[in-house]
Image (cartoon, rainbow, N blue to C red; front, side):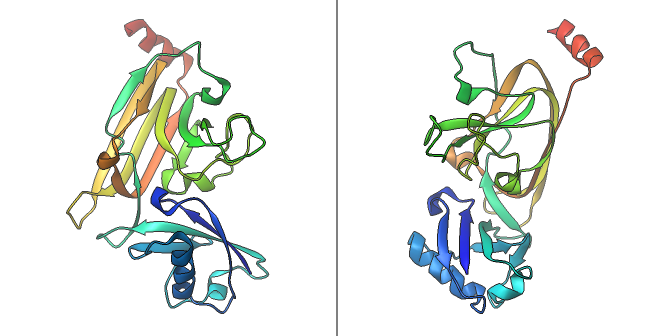
Length: 236
């Protein structure tokens, strides 16, 4: 059976393909992945069909009937709190920016949520370059964001690299909520943030050592009604 392995940790590299038997255990499949990436998966877990797979389970027990191809997603396991986490932006530090007339088509943003990624489509003129993923208005689970059907390069409309960064909020109301594990602690803390952005956009930027281990992270964006937008613009 063909296995597509997708990573949410940059140090593990890009996606890879494996051949596995349905009777193989998850633990054995982990060992195969470790050989491919030349790194230990201690502290990581596998997710198949939106379910976390235990080491003693067989691959077949995690699959839907008649599955021909299996997608396995590799997540970093949180130290405490009994959950699964992924390392991402702290969502604390945002920088307000003005629009640029020099922005290329690969950097065009839409109202709502946008993120930066890297295009993997060899036919795209921005192959292996930073591109914007235009997610827009809605509710977004950041843990599984790269598996969303809307997670596309803004130029070629093909799926870019799974790793993304620098969340961008543009001309919208937004709410951010989640649970994260502080460094050196075993219990999660609640995170909430909200705001309004009009006539400009903000980018959440972090240094590598400022990232957080998130158990859950939800971003909700809403359009600004014309009356609400006009009132805020008059205050600017």
